[in-house]
Length: 437
Image (cartoon, rainbow, N blue to C red; front, top):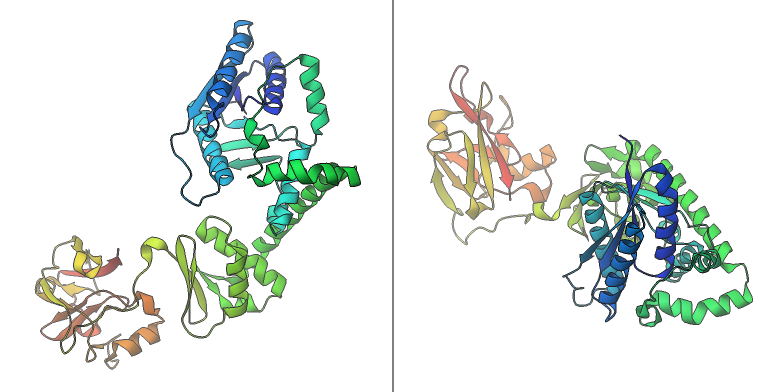
C-alpha cells in the first residue's frame, strides 16, 4: 500500500518552516497528509514558545483546509555529566521523531538541512580528524530503524531558502541557542564561516561537493569490504592469517566492517590502529571495545559481547579440591547454578549421553590438577589443560563446574561427556550443556 502521509521535522525556525510549507503545497494535490513533528528539548527558555508557535501555525493552516497536523514530544531526560549536549540533543531528537512518526503510521521524515549545513558538517568533521565516513557528512536519504530520513534541500544554498521565506511571508522563530558559542557549530558559523567565504566565495558549494565525493568513497569501501569479508571470516571469528594476507589498506577496511557487524556501530579509530599493530596469530590477547571485548586465540579473533565476558579461571581454595556440591541432573530442563555463574541445560538423547542413574548422583566441583578427560573410545585420558588445547577451546571458555561420579570425570564444560562415562546403547540417558551467565 502506498504511503498516505509524510512527516516534517519541525523546529519552528526558518528552514523547517519553509520545508513544512513547501511539503504541504506538494502533498495537497497528491492527497497526502503532512505531520509537523516537534521535539521540545527543554534546553532554552524559549522552548515553550517554539512549541506554542508550531502548534498555532499548523492549527491556522489546518483551518484553511491544508492537510497538516501538529505533534510534539517533550523530553524529560537530560544529558549525563560530561556528555556532549549537542550529541545528546541530536540522538534524543531523532529517537523522539522516529517514535512520533511510527505512532502515526509514517515511515518518511523530511529534514530541512541545506547545502551550508552540509558544508559546515564536512568542515567540522575534518577539524575533528574524522575519517572518510565522517567526511561524508549527511546522506540525502537513509533508511534506519524502520524510518526513511530524507533531506530534499541538501543541494539548495541557504539564500534560496531565505528567498522562499520572504516570498511566502512565512513567520518563524529564531533559536537563541544558535548564538551560544560554547557549541562547535555556532563557533564555526560566527568566527570561521564569514572569513572563509570572504576568502573563498565558492566554499559552501566546494565543501558540499567534497562531502558527496566522500559518500561515493564510503559506498565503494563498503562494496570492497563485502568482497573481502567471506575470505577472512571463519564462522563467527576472523581468520587472522587470511586477514594478514591482504594489503594494509584492505586489512583496515575489512576489519572495520567485521567489527561493525558485531558491535552494531563504527568502532574508534584508535582500536583499529591497535589491532593493525598488535593482532597476530600468536598467543591469547584481549582488546576492550564498546559493549564487549575482542579476544584472539589460535589464529582467530572473536568478539565477546559484554554479557558473555567471563573470568579466565575460577580460583580454587588453597590446599583443597575446590568448590563442591552434589546435584540430581537426571531431570530435563535448566538447572541454575548461581554460585558457578551459569546454568546446566539437561536434555534427553538417544546416544552419547550419561545414564539417568549416573546423572542423579553427580558431584560438581572446580577443576583440580589431577583431573583427566578421555576424548573418545580407545584414546588415553589426558589432563584438562591438554584436552582444552587439543580441542582449541579458548582460555576464557574453560569455566564452569566439572561433574564427577565417584571420583571419575563425567562431564567438562567446553569438552563434553567423558568417553568413560557414555551410557550403554539402549539406556535412558541425558546430555549436558553449560551456559555461563
